[in-house]
Every structure is written in C-alpha cells, then in structure tokens.
Image (cartoon, rainbow, N blue to C red):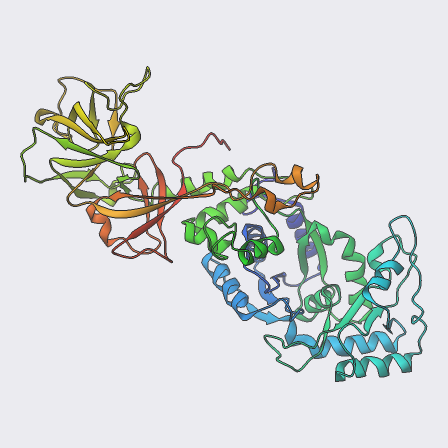
Length: 554
C-alpha cells in the first residue's frame, strides 16, 4: 500500500518535485476533468483528493473542467451534481472550465492539422474504420480516402461544420502511422458528426471532437502542467503528446498515469451505474447502496472519512483491489467522537414490568457519548411498558446466552435490572409480550453492588417512543461478480436481491428533533443517518451507515 498522499512521497509527487527543481514549470496546475454524463463515484473521489491536494502542497492551482464533448450523454444535472460533490468533499477549484468553451479553438487547431497534411476527412463507416485499424499482431490498412488533397479535406471539413452531412457520414482522422505498434496511433478519429443540441452550446455545433483530441488541447489551453489520469490512458500518451506538438500548442502539459481505485463488492463504471439507475435496480444515483459520492452522502458517510481513506490508499502504478471494509473503518473512526449515542429498537418486542407503578414515568440520565464528554447528557423516559429487541429474548437459550429468558435477569442500559417471569404468544406461537419484574435498588448510577448480571440490553420506553423506519444495507454486488463475468454473465446477474432491508421500530423521544443527515450511534446496531430524501418528522427514516464493529485491521 502506498503511503499517505498528504504527508509523504509517491511517484507523482516525485515527478512534480523534479520538474520544479529543473525549472520546467513556474507554477503547478492540475485539473479534475469529469465528463458530465453521470454522478461521481468513490473512484473520482480519489482523483479529486490527488489533484487538489497535490496542487495545494506546491502552492499551485486546480481547475474543475467538464469534458463535455459528447452531447448525446451529457446533461446540466450532472454538471451541478459534480460541483456539489467536489464542494462537499471540502475542495474549491481555482477556475471552472468547460471543454465546449474551446470548441472554436479546437476547430481551428484541426484546420491547422489539415493544412499541415496531418489530418483528412474519411467517408468510411465506423465498422470499416475499426477493421482498418488491424490488431495487436497485424498492422492497419490505409483508408482509400487517406490521400485526399489538403484543399479537398479543408472543403469537406468546413462543410461538415456547416451541417451538410448526416450523422456518421464522415469523420476527421489524424494522419499518423497505420503500421504503428500502438493502435491508438493508427489514424485515430478526431471529429465526428452529431446533429444534437449541446447542454452548453445549444445548436451552434454539429461536429464534436473526440476525447483523445480534445483532452490534450484543453490541458494545453489551460496551462495544466501535470495531467493526471488512470492507467487505461497510458497507451494514449503518445497520441496526447502528438496532438500537443502537431497542433503547435504553446503550453506542454505532462500526462502521468496511476492505478484507478477498485473496491470489493463495488461497481466502478459510470456506464454500469447508469444501467442500475435506468433499469430501476436502485432508486436513483443517490441510492445509499450506490458507490456514488451522493449515495455515500445520503447513506451518512462523512467527507472527512472519504478523504482520509483516499489519502491512506495513496497512488500506485499497479492495479490492486481495496477491501471496502477499509473505507468503512475510516467512517467509524470519524464518527465515533462525533455521533451521539442513543437507543433504537429495530425489531420491537413489548415488555410489561409488572411491579412498576402504573401511570408513573421517570426520566433517567444518559450520556450522549462516553468517549466525548463535551456532548453532555440527555433525559430518557422509563415506565411500566418498554420495547426491547426480539432477539434479546429466547424461550430456550443456548449456553452462554446472557440476555433475557425465563428466570434470567439482565440490566437495562441506563436503567434497572429486570427479570423475566412470563411471556405471551400469538396464535402462530410467536412470543409477542414479556412480563418482567424490576429491582428498584439497581438503578443505574446509584453505585449498586449487590449482585452482578452478565447481560445488558437496550430498550425504548413505549408510551413516548418515536416510530422509525430503519434501512439496513448489504453490498449491492456479490463477491462472485468478477469471476462470473468471465464465464459469460454480466454484472446484473450478481446484483444482490437482499441489499436492502426495511424494518419498522422505535427510537427515543428526543429523536423527534432529528434533522436530515443527523448521525447517531444506536446501541449495538451501528451508526445511522437521518435520510435527507424521505425522512419526515412524523416518520423518521434512518439509513445504517456502518455496523459498530469489523474484523478489518489497518
């Protein structure tokens, strides 16, 4: 595992240091350049942290740039969501740019390539172009349109811009080397025709640059010094450099590749995530089961936890998969001092304390967070009727079961010892009510030492309890995904049908004031977040963020 990006060295930082020492750049400029064709996911968070913190460390700048060169897939909704996510993670860009702002300059640079004999208009179909490219073992074949004159290419390209041709009728290709061992250098397509409105430029354009042409130009126009991208673009670097050089760009950015983030049980493809949304496997991009930043935010993850996780995994040149439990570890570490402790009963079982005075309610003291005394105390009611968890009672318990069973005594958290002496079943044989007695001498906080019990259980007083819905999450994608996809199945075959469980229960009455995105630790159940989308004062909805414990160790 690479060391913490924020405090220690890594290969990208070493490159930057060397470039500065050699005087290659006066100021470091990085960029985060998402395409606005979906919501950001946890892999993008790694790139955000890397680019913004690298520039900050060297007193440089970071641009937020939208690579909006494909009007068929992009939308203003995605633009706004990306801005929100970057801000939520705690970063602010020095400049906000759109690739579409440079369409005119890109067009002029393409004209320059044609005039230099470095680009030509091709009438071949996409299938024919794909076949011409050859394979890793066989060289490509030249297009029959490759030797058009400069004058003819200029005329055709200007007519492409004027809208004279249908979608797919022609493309502009770079003229490089059809025998290159790097397939990306075999006359790649630079422009294609799309008669489609663009979210930023409207109907001004009907030809749009390809990513491999647009991206290096954008970097050069903005004065980006270090263009940091993932390893799948490593083979594209010669083309990146070729475009910067042949288009005679004044700025000379340097592309550096690092390994993308892979997490267990997690889909890290915007295309696949969009498919999950479109086909209703989830209820939107911000579904708490999604690995999107908005999904993590709704689930209850904190930006501090995500950033700490990204810093810890660092950057490397080799592919690896990180256990998702590592991310959850950082969430627990961040919340343990921030989240108030409280009690919630997820699967309620009614308990009647038969020797407690009818109609009496007493208010008990409880710490909000024993690990953070500054969070103070709260008052919780106690009376004759309470709710406990169904699995805190068994008629015939196994050995080492220390919770309630007939004749056994347990401590109620913050309250008294109670002992079960009877229970009621419904017609199906399910236990629906317990009858217990309490010992008034055993009140919590009084220093009672008369006897000890091995079990402590949580509870909620029945008459003041606030109804709540608890949403418990499991991984959306099963472990077998990667293996089984190799056997001809798709990732959709391994969507977990049990990834969400909805349960109705109760919480303490003080929770009626809980607001969207308030976070709590429910005794024994884990950390929960008030769902900002569906929770209401009348029906609180809590998303489980993470369980309390994990076997994961750093």
